[in-house]
Length: 304
Image (cartoon, rainbow, N blue to C red; front, side, top):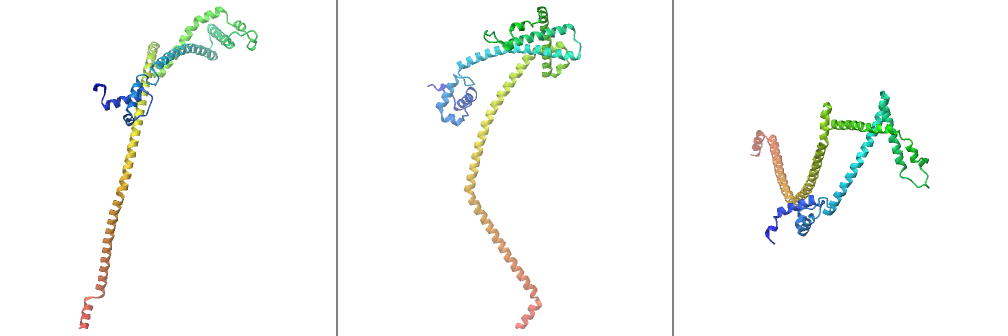
């Protein structure tokens, strides 16, 4: 095999570390493990060509991406209807609140009452479920035909349906402005036209901030992996240092103790000699005080 097919050991080890940390699930492999198992290292490199970063095969990852795309599409459709349902319910709640404080016009009352009646009948009809067999009695003895009789007049419904988009649009605009002011409190004092322009770009801004958060989270995870590796390395170094200190203590403790004992013995010897000299000095002092010059001279004459 040509020499160009191989890379330097440092480059090869760097590639293997990238494979283990990004392209494959966490393996917790050290450089020593990879060097001691070269065939396993080649297996990791080969396996990385057939799986994605999450560990799924490329075919399965493609099918999963398509499934998630369909899920997001259905979720978007459901969210649209759910948002519309909640906005209509909030319109009715605001209507009841306003009736306690202000006097509404006859058109407003007619609109909200028609909307409430239509919404209530639709919800109850949905609770009855699909058409049942004749053998099964209807729920509470209520048929769909009975509920349809409670529908508002068709003229009122057509008039209400023509006004409803304007009311929903106004309610959604208030919500968008509230979200904008929460995201950017300085926008609270802006004009309605400027707020509408900012709301138009708000979704793009939020997507960008979400991507930044995801990138920061990914970088944090990488830093955590590096921190764990460094912590493990530092722990191993500390253990080796402790073992070395223990060995040094065991090897040099007796030698140091014997030297300390010799110094202590020498010190005690010198101290004992000083004590003996001090005693001798005291003895001579006593003799000097006892036998003065006159007494010594008298004793000398007597002995002659």
